[in-house]
Length: 204
Image (cartoon, rainbow, N blue to C red):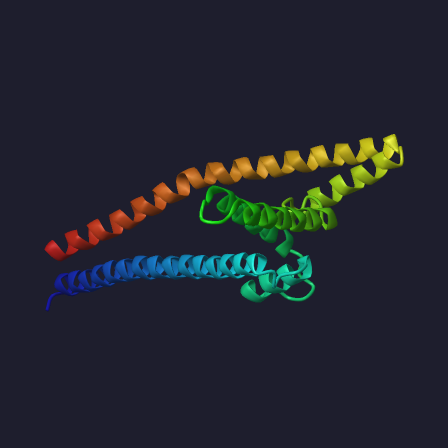
């Protein structure tokens, strides 16, 4: 076998390997994303069903019961407080589903609605602005505290800090969005070119 034929043979093998690897990588990524999404939806359904049934049959008596259920489903630790935003969102979604349904008596619907509203109010009063990032949440809580005691200078300083933080966040978001505009097209083009050159080398 000539040196040229040997080189071409190696190029063909490399191209075949590249095509196979690309296809397998894409398939594995798709399966992983699918399983992750299915796991997330399954956990959400389990949480919704458990809380809905618990509120209806009154086995859930307090916010502590809701917290234990939420942490049990998602596996949060005892000191993890990230559940607050997710729990409030879950209760709001249950409230929307309750009010949009027509299968229950009006008195029962009103009773469950009032209990859900009470739970939401209690969760948010204990941890206001739970949906915000920690830095922004702490600044807003400080502003509220300083405003309530009439410390205008400290409130103004905290407002300035909050404005600066928001500006930094927005700048980072803009950069991320700009990079994302090119990352997906470039990745797609790279995948297509890999397959095309692999096919061309096989044809030759």
